[in-house]
Image (tube, rainbow, N blue to C red; front, side, top):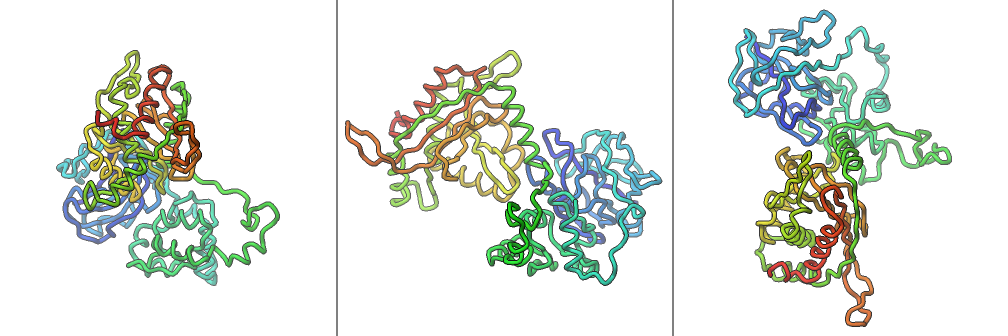
Amino acid sequence: MSSVFPLPDVGEGLTEADIVSWKVAEGDTVTVNQILVEIETAKSLVELPSPEAGTIAALLVSEGETVEVGTPIVRFGDADAGPAGDHSAGDDSADGSAPDQTAAVPAPAETGDGAAGPNLVGYGVKTSSAKRRPRRRPEDAPAAAPSAERPAEIAASSAASGSPAGSDPTPAAEQSDPGSAERSGRVLAKPPVRKLAKDRGVDLAQVPATGSRGEVTRADLLAHLEQGAGSADDSDAHAGAVPGDGGSGGQREERIPLKGVHRMMAKAMVESAFTAPHVTEFLDVDVTRTMDLVRRIKAEKLLGEDVKVSPLAIVAKAVAWAAMRYPMINAVLDGDEIVQRRYVNLGIAAATPRGLIVPNIKDAHMLGLAELAGAIRELAETARAGRTSLAAQAGGTITITNVGVFGVDAGTPIINPGESAIIAFGQVRKRPWVVDDEIVVREITTLGISADHRVVDGEIISRFLADVGRALEEPAVMLA
């Protein structure tokens, strides 16, 4: 008896996901809750655990492929239940295309006789009529390359093909068999590594591989880039360039698919920009006392050995404090009602390799400086690792974007959907400043705020921004 595991709905109504990397291979024996695969949704990387114990009969989807919720991705059972990659479980179409998934799948695993298995991993699969994107049949494939073609040339031609950025044409079975990859002339690497190599113009065949399965890892690629090696010898690349092509050897444009986090953020920003009338204000602030406080906390370890306080932590404290004083800045428009939130879930915009995400610190108004500093550090580390959960990105009430970390003084940020204000924190730098009618050198930053003028009027916006500035000029006011 065999069963299939369809791609589940991992939350917030997302309809599809990219298969990033398989953690198992065909023929492996797995236990309940053992990680099967890592997928990328429009919001986060997610590891899917096995809903049952058994043997992996077939991996039905290749790494790099985008599939819709409800699509079978794994078949459990005996290895001889069907050919590897055959979609016989639930696929009766003669041409190999996916069937209409109109039948509801009541649990992550459905047995071959139609009985639903227990929901052991905390989620089910929503009813969906989505169809899997058709896969290329063997008769549709291009003619095989001549056998005399060298492996490096095969890899180069694959990288130069029109496949989507980040896609991995290597079948899942081949991913788990380095010898198979070598025999086919392919370079073994995960889709994110392939995408980075494509973006940087690197031929993976030229990168020494140190992965446990003989694959090129991200560290291998970065080390190769640091050594100054590119997709070809740099001198040759520049010699072959034509005037005005940016040294790309004639390739003047590159098309990158808008997908995953980038697509979700693009949609959200368009919706926000053309729905909420933005009003923006700026304020220059003398943050010398704030910077002195940060330096003193670090030097004297006032909050403990392991607490690392940054200027952003003081800004977060000031924003949460001021937001509680002006609840309308922390409100949101819901139909014909304005919902005032008397709590602060403070969003911190985080730039990650996958794109911009905005996780938030729950009940930030109740946290002390040490707790805020720890929460921001954990948030940043989780975001960089691509492990930010959907729950961490939901429910935000107001956001800070730290443009200063990129050396920028100010900006006009777009409001995060579901909120009514976002604060931009610019770089801190020494500037001449007037104090008691004398020009002195002080540490200055620029705060910018964009707010939804349907919810907040100019007076509240101005008073709120002035209070944040006052708290940064003299942090002691937050203790009053």
